[in-house]
Length: 112
Length: 111
Image (tube, rainbow over all chains, first blue to last red):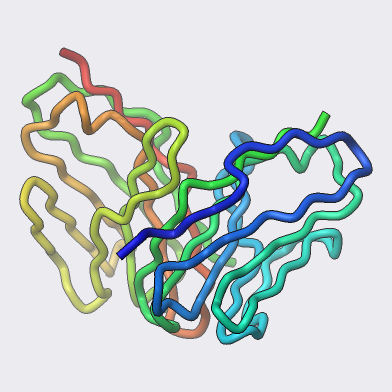
């Protein structure tokens, strides 16, 4: 089975712009979670989607949003980018709401 | 709230055993995990343990869980240079899908 894929792998944006990141989960996985990883804050949970519904949300401002499609692919969007949004954004998929998550390679976002 | 703590750095010599420690605060944690992250890569699930177990062994990896002290450790036997990476401890409770990660321990393996 192919693993979790994320596109693009690298992205450079400027302050005030918006960005959309994409995640394709492992085939058959219905749960997709997003995380932000920075050197200062470590790994922080953004949100989780299951069967196109947001099931859980971390403590991030409303500029961060996401969605999940009927084929379980997920996108996350960040509007009005700030310098502090520079990070590695990781997506993880699970078969359902079970105990294991499998991570993609991440999208590295740099905001200038 | 939930919190997971780890020491940030560990150096060992090639061939020695490495022990990476983790403490957590959420007593309702049902699953505890170890992930490995190599430079420029995502997280790779190494192993996980259910809270009703106290030990799990998988080839060179041994996980020990002391539920009373909320302490988790990962032992890597015969550590190799390819084991150099950041190791994350994580917990998940039975009520949500939210995983809580520790800050990561950077393991350096010296030749």
